[in-house]
Length: 202
Image 1 (spheres, helix red, strand yellow):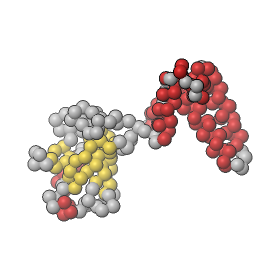
Image 2 (image 1 turned 30 degrees about the vertical axis):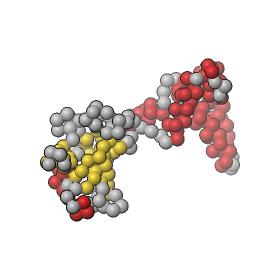
Image 3 (image 1 turned 120 degrees about the vertical axis):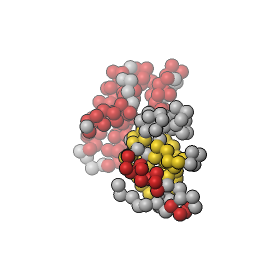
Image 4 (image 1 turned 45 degrees about the vertical axis):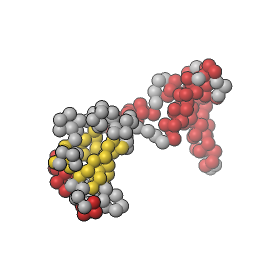
């Protein structure tokens, strides 16, 4: 693994913070502390091990619960006094049973696209009382939504063969917007598409 030995002397007690991040979803799962022995054991066993400040000993996450953090990669921060540890978690990470120690779901998010998905879902749910474009299209049914995706796909292809990049991006955005609506009309989200693409990697 290509990373430097942390500067153990910066914190006086020989510990550095270790931020634990899901390698797939990029969610931050928890924060622990490592010393040299904990880091060595993590690298040897490929299961994340901390130095527990309360137990005063090495502690492999999951040693009692079976909810291990399987090591993927380790990176140093710019000051070489904090570690970013990428993992594949086995089950929820927090002792409370939550996915993360911040009581958040450990799930893929796609930045603004996820926000847009949420907005589409909200307007779909409020379709009966809303005059929004999204609501009106959902009222017309899945055939109309599918037709709009087809129309936007054709317009995107036409613009792709032209030299106007601004129009190409405009039509591409229209296509993606309507495709997100079609996914929801069929009962799916971007997470389902992500899962399908991940399956194809294997």
